[in-house]
Image (cartoon, rainbow, N blue to C red; front, side, top):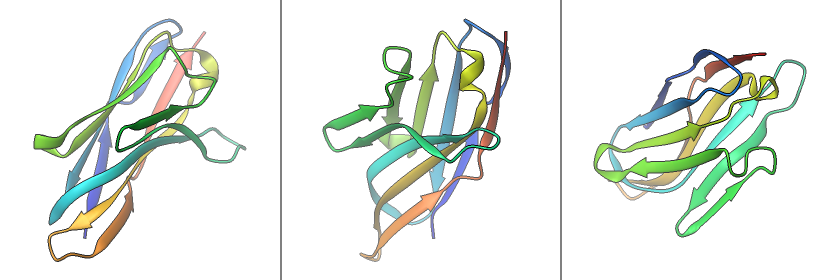
Length: 119
């Protein structure tokens, strides 16, 4: 199947930036939709940013600060996070859906990467 591995999380001060990466591996024919989600302690997992074809959406709380992008040649997606705030502290997960080489669909989650923003 498809494995997603996130990296790039860590501890940063408020106002600084981080870039998360999510590398997909497996017999992938195409990645049609991708997204970043986050889950803070005691809260439900929420959508941060998602891209499906030509449509990209962002949570209101990150608009203007976060940017989702991808490198198709590397099957890797990114989340550039600028002007980080303490309320951005959470475990960040990537999600991808698409088509395998054998013609079946896939949908996978990464294992998560911790982002902690100190005030």
